[in-house]
Length: 129
Image (cartoon, rainbow, N blue to C red):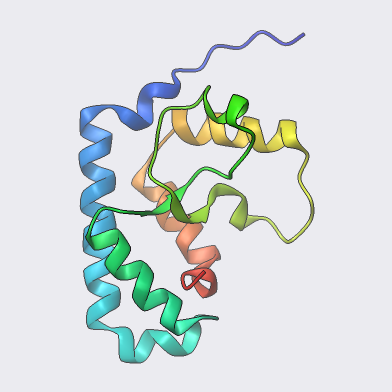
């Protein structure tokens, strides 16, 4: 078995929680202000509007984990449910459970705003999900 230790609490450090929340709010406000231009590029425009308000009221985050079993999710730091997941950067191929779990762990341990921006850029049309 592979032995690896990751600091998965990186995403829940006070600094990163503050940065993630500021990014979420800033991006939600930008989307709201540009909604009349943006809604053409999203699959479900009404869903986007709903998600903007869910993020603004701190009910959701823009990017988060790909959902897994309760057991696997319990091994990760707690995040709000998300509009997009880290697996949205991949084409619609089925990823194995183990691969998804490793991606979740890597997201938690190597969290950065840049990664969130990259995921949003690649899955922008799904922001109304």
